[in-house]
Image (cartoon, rainbow, N blue to C red; front, side):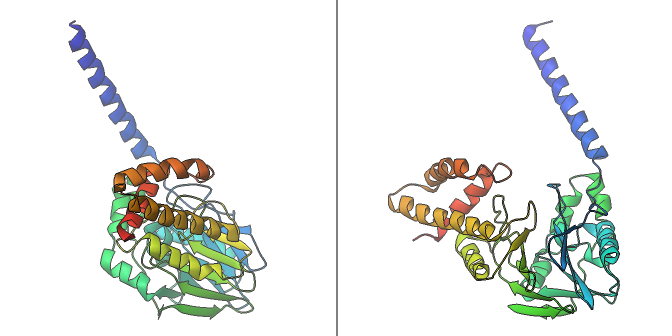
Length: 315
């Protein structure tokens, strides 16, 4: 056989194998279900079911008062919501439930529909605006990725809120109070954090984590994210529970503040020197990546979007 023809055949065969393997992996990928009997007690009244670095699963919060239980980020789809409800019932005999989410993204919110009809759903008005604007588009993107995700999202919907708030809202669960703050836009317009006052536990959502921040909304930006961080830095926090990844303390918030402040300052300097956006992205990527080796995943794309946002914001 002609050598060029042989190379063409081999390349085609390799491509076909890749497609087959990819298709097989997609067809057999298990549904991302929240772990059962794995709730970690992190304070007197707060439990967390950790994501264990699994995709499409959030860190789920369960706050137990003498009268009622609050669930924070009930998971992706009704099946996960049922798991979370079951875990909450194992931890307490409370019949009264509150359900909240840190933002509207599917893995954080779409399990709420599995909770009883008399459960109280609370949303910030900014979060509701996200839902009204983007509807189920985020879930539809997930459903296109694998058959398992499509099946998990079957029948999922945004549970209508029973209570809306603008900036702050407080719920007394009986012996423990959860203070809610609408701090977006940051990751999304409707970012909401939850502070368990007596236990000094803060659920930060995607506003502060030990991984690269993702500007995931048209309303996202470096300047507004810094405002969101400033709003929570004054809280007296012992434990930070992010949307994803390991638990931390107030230094998690400080690290995000330093990241965005550094980008904002350096972009201003380099733009003043006449560098283009592409040149600034290249320069800051080389500066930041070595300093953030403990942050999960390759952050090149996230640095790129943050730097370009800061470049557009800079005078």
